[in-house]
Amino acid sequence: MSSSAATRSRNGFWLSLVGAITFSGKGVVVKLLMREGVDAITCLGLRMLLAAPLFAAMAWWGGRSRAQPSPSDVRRVAFLGFTGYYLSSTLDFLGLEHISASLERLILYVYPTVVLVLGRLRGQPPIRARQWGALALSYLGVILAFGGEARRATAVVGVSQDVLVGAGLVLASAITYAVYIVLSGETVGRFGALRLTGWASGSASALCIVQFFATRTHLVATADAWMTPRIFGLSLVNATLCTAIPMWMVMRGIEMIGSARAAQIGLVGPLSTVVLAVVLLGEPVTWSMIAGTVLVLGGTALIRGPSSVRPPAIAPAP
Image (cartoon, rainbow, N blue to C red; front, side, top):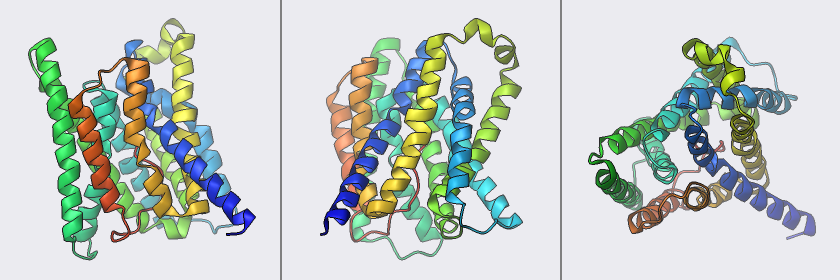
């Protein structure tokens, strides 16, 4: 390997790694905002409001040398933005009101298994025995981690229904994001990964901002009373260091080292979320969470292995 190729590979590795780690901090930052009294819809609205200019820059940069999209392309990208970044993010943030950041990231990471099933329903090759095993491994890990958190919640408040609601919302988020992945895989060739991500994220930003202004009118009118420097700072971190910048890092990493290697490196996401949640949120370290994380990572690695379908060149889960 030439020195320039080695440098490109090394830079691609670090961009993919840092992008995956910083993106995984999203749930932790959202939980910190919720401790400040900010609800899920407000967290999401502030995130997208502050990130929207960066999404616009991504769309412009990725489309400099490409033809203007047709009206049908615009409609398709708008639908992708609705499913992949608006609906999925809304469900995810609502779920975070009920469960820990560690469990949230673990459940989100089953989306490759949903992609596999959806791909089969859309005519892709049959699911192999190895992939069925990967599905079983991933969901066993989620069930194990969910059971541990449900038992802990029951011991504290006497009921685990809150955990069930939160896990269901985040699982629905993973499913809607998987729909985005499958459909974006059929569109990315015409748009390019960076341009598609910018357009889809931008359309989702508009929906999230409208949702915030429409449903939190009283908060908008009294922003000077509740928008503390800490809330604004955490929201800015969420929009930049945990959203837009990691998206660019992952896209650039994919260009440098390919989607397969970038996807493998992205497996660090759930583990880094657990570590950040323990350090910054004081979430407990339990054997069920550790074992569940190992199983989910193992299942995802099998699905993204050499015998599997090529991972899509898109940003990490919302």
